[in-house]
Image (cartoon, rainbow, N blue to C red; front, side, top):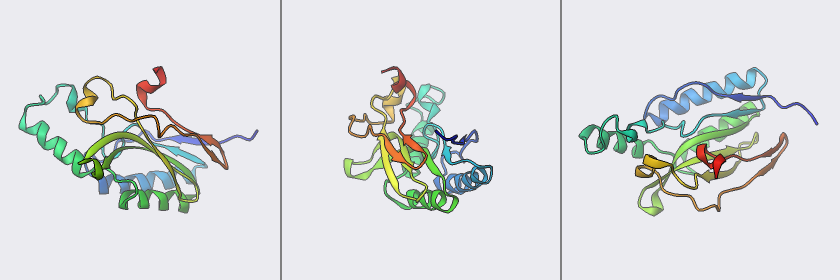
Length: 171
């Protein structure tokens, strides 16, 4: 069994700005690769942010909360789409496997957003997207429920990759 070097990214995204956050992610992926990482992992809903305002900071009925939700919707990630293409290119160019926490937008369901994990191979292939099974507490205001069909483990050159989101580890 060989040693695998993984990088857990501990930087904030550019709040509610998908394009700027992807620019930042591409730079961080490159930095991690130059330091020897073979696997680069970003946190829960890194793109474009975790919507902490759902826990009452802004008050759900306030105009500012509604504007924040509209920005979240406008800056969420479609899979596949331009954002995933850029991330896949960054993984391929740097030769790293990538796991990215995203707010995934599914337009075909009238705009449902999911708390998802996007997994991309070092060859730049989208291996899969896992949608959080049960959004926790106030998260249900924002995210739809997954259905278990996205629970996969992927065979890669560095080993088997899979992931769960937050409280899923307790289920």
